[in-house]
Image (cartoon, rainbow, N blue to C red; front, side, top):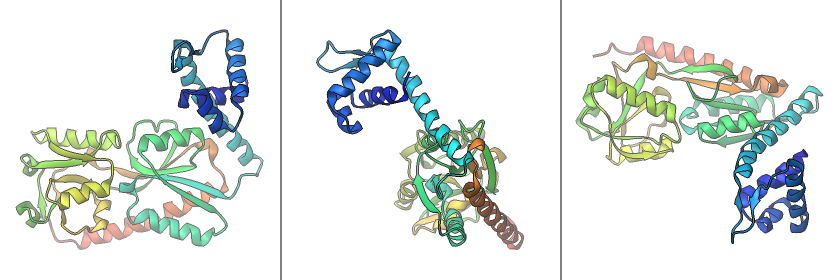
Length: 314
């Protein structure tokens, strides 16, 4: 079975139209139709139902689409690994990240890395965690920077960079609770919540829900967003409260007060971590990991000094 024919098949699946798929692939429609027909003959089943006004996948076609996508993704990764093993990998680094994990720290790491490796082409992609994991597995990304734990990272290499030691409630500065230096989870029981979209960060959302339930209430969610900045803007507008890890506090958005939650359970804290495919390690990626590890160690020391100098909790 030729990889090219699987790519042709997946293009038709995406477009559900032979003409549009041919345009995307840059080949003539008759050539694409012949390729699909050869694939059907090779497998011995019909992949598309062409009797309808719009083509549809047969049951066999739906099954092949799932498997073909995995095969094509693994082929991309295999080529990348082979080039890296031969010492032919380009000086390029593709980094995926989520916005809530990137404030301040990642920018510092990128700046230091570019100073030390100006010849490396650096590409940054802000993506949903699930999309980062998919692209990492397929070889479309070299490394990801995200909050752990995260579903789907089993089998990858990880490096904990920054440990979130405190959890904060982001609330409108006009609220009476915002005048306090710290609060307890139960203080939020009757407040409206603005939280991350579960499709964007299911693990963090589940942790927040579990922590609220442990405090004896379910959060009254009035708005959701996949963007951390949008969540904070909604908080600033007075719509509700959100729960976030301490790194987000560096945004200092007008209208938002971050108040420490004293009794937030340990399991709600997160590790801001690098994630990569162990077989895909090369010199460029190793240099980046070293920079992030060093900057993380430096940041942890600063945070520890700040904690020592902070006034006692009230």
